[in-house]
Length: 104
Length: 153
Length: 149
Image 1 (cartoon, one colour):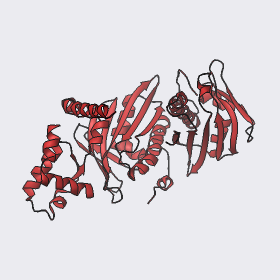
Image 2 (cartoon, rainbow over the protein chains, first blue to last red):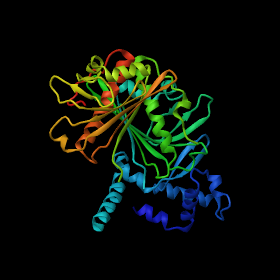
Image 3 (cartoon, rainbow over the protein chains, first blue to last red):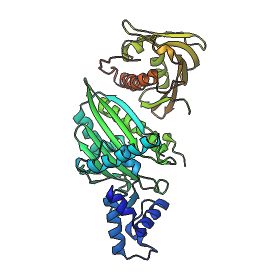
Image 4 (cartoon, one colour):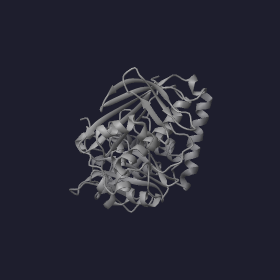
């Protein structure tokens, strides 16, 4: 949960997410194109987004394609997330459940 | 909002081991998966690719869960321009022994409400899994003309 | 809220005529439909009935009979409990696709969250897998099921 908030707290990272929302599946080069950030900075931000599970990557030959990995994936994926991630996932699910209960 | 999950259940006269092999071995998939060879080392976190007969890659994916011969799960995206902007969805195969049969349940979920790829996979999976069943039970896959799936533009 | 329906598509190496025959002839259904024999003259408006030596069986009325392309009938409940739910409908669409046949079974007009929906969602994949194996290998699936149909 902390990862997600920390990841979203930065404006540069939010703009990267916006870019992917406009067009999913971009390579690092494509994401860097036209941004005022250095390539290094973009790489660092993407790593943080990936660690927070907001972005996922797929290998396509020698390139990596970046995709938005929205929260719903976590919600449906509770039964398949690996053991060491289960703690983080349950916390998110539990928070969601509590918020939904409060709304009822 | 998401599209409802796509679920397909079938029963095949085979063993879980043989079915697992058929789902993960490129030589096998080529015969029933419209010529696609699935290529991966099938370790959690590893990438996997669907390779066309001409060697080009049609889909790129990531292995999420491997528990042979019981559960296999991966996400993948189709790399064509038509589907490139979609969220990666999760495909989970559950293989359960059922007497002399194996009950195979495929759940493909996580598609956004406006997903076009969802329509494609809804048409593709019944054909692929029907052909897989025939291959394992008769020794021959089905000859389903790809055009017959009528993917919309 | 739209009414729920169960749709299942399978591809079978057979001919439309053989598939039609398998769906409408009791000698065949008895073999792959786990002992349930079907009887009907398959004219629109006629009744049809499945029978089984020990289990409740569906019955109903023929709605569409267009051999070998389309067959539809009502699906009336087998048990008292299920009779509380509305009468549903089953449609078989048989389409040739090159050397194989595409069979689409649509079971609709079901009560949302009802027992019929749950039961047929489990039953159809099993029956249709057995039908496919029967037509392709000559043998139905070797299975003991708790409740078919």
